[in-house]
Length: 513
Image 1: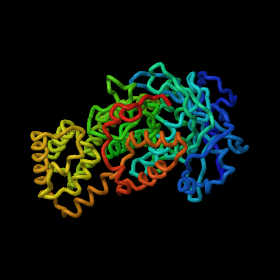
Image 2: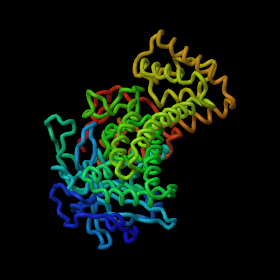
Image 3: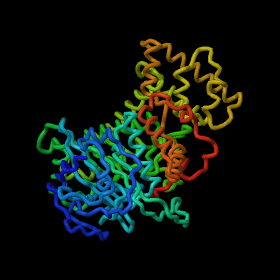
Image 4: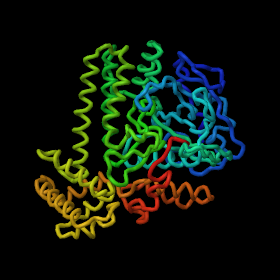
């Protein structure tokens, strides 16, 4: 691999702590601290994303590259570091947070000029580990590796995963915070992104009144990641904020389209580039439920439930607006921009639903149609992905009982089937208003609705299998997630088996990783 191409422009542009001291502490007035990965004696490669490696300019993997994949024996051109950021967690100001388990190798530029940051997750403690060990366990690393790639192939903006490796260590974790910690296999995942900058980086500088650093960070971000912004002076910061709002709204709509629930939408887990970042207690939607949250820490308030993600994104943007206010200094503009977020989000959301249903455009009455559909989905506990899969093949003479028998997580009685039949009749009447052909409508449904989603129970089974030394399911899931709009494996196309309803790691998860 071409690791000699990796550089560190971030630490060349901002103030930092260069002590390499892993002691966990506050690092005021700096945006990073240099830190070396822990090093691991017996690493073992589990998976490597060669297509991504070639794409970003690293090239092909050779056996000698295993050391780099876990942060061992790094060359002199790589000065590793962790960044400092702050954030609001579950609605409360948490102060300094930072890269507690993430260590950056730096940035690589491919032959086409595209820049990509490379980051280890689980390679050891940093000054921002907050009394933790900086390690990661196999289950969380597999989940991040597979899900970030799944989202990419679904067409959702996201960080990506380059490699997954055992560290050869065991790590102590209490998976459900029940007072029963156990040793688990340790692992390191390398993830990549155009940038890992978060709302929290800007919040930290603003909270510390480091306004020069705040401005330099905004200038750096605009120059490197927002080429569409050509304005100058304070206007460019307004354009910057508007762009973040638009990208964030677009991301939320994509989450709703595929049924993704992040589980922990703290401001420090929000990308200023509009990427899905930090795959912790997430879940793809099984039965449709606007109140579903996969994160046990989010119970009972369900702040980050599926149906609240747009609202929470707007709340998080309010916090970013406060952080950027010293640069923008226009309260009315910020307020209007944030109010416009809601209008733009809901318009985009409803346009997305039109495509999922194969409707040509948003028409009068469609909002009521969508509301009635949501009520039906929740009452009948219908599987989100499978429901739309059935719509694709729906015919006028379809036997609904047969068509939808494996879509609900409860037994559908005659009354429920009657409600479903009434909805389908309403849907067919709406389709009749389309200005596009039936074939074009079906094509739209196929392009918008995945056949395969990476359900938590599949991840659970895959992790269990890897723990036994096998890789077959990992390989099959990787192929399936790379082709989500096709049905490659029928065994992956069903709803969650009932045996997994209450299994930790399948229906609900903790942040313990």
